[in-house]
Length: 131
Image (cartoon, rainbow, N blue to C red; front, top):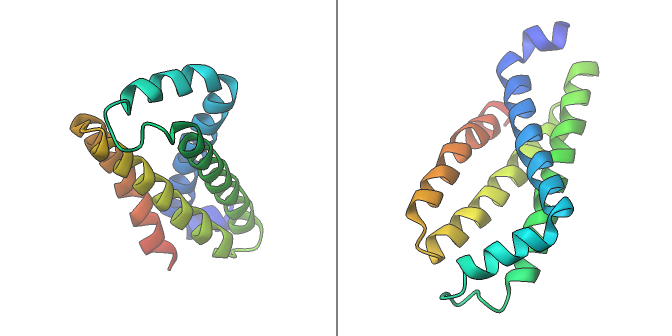
């Protein structure tokens, strides 16, 4: 309880990133073919069209590791007050979001890119709080 009172914003932001990235990663695992099919269409007129399975796997791995690092960081903050793993998770979350933003911009999906920016704001704020 003391850690929550010492790091309320950090803990709430970590929970936000855990939910965001673990849910997204689990969805990609459960519905790999559906995600792959949609993304192949989304990137069909871009230079990335032949790399969609590799890029989807890369994003999946990055999201899952980011979510797991945030979860480990949350537990560490709650138990010991150590913020190192939380910082690693927040940084990797920002990198995952930048990958997604790059893809949306390449696909000329500017509305999708705007949505990614909304997720990036709390993630980068968490990096700022934890550094």
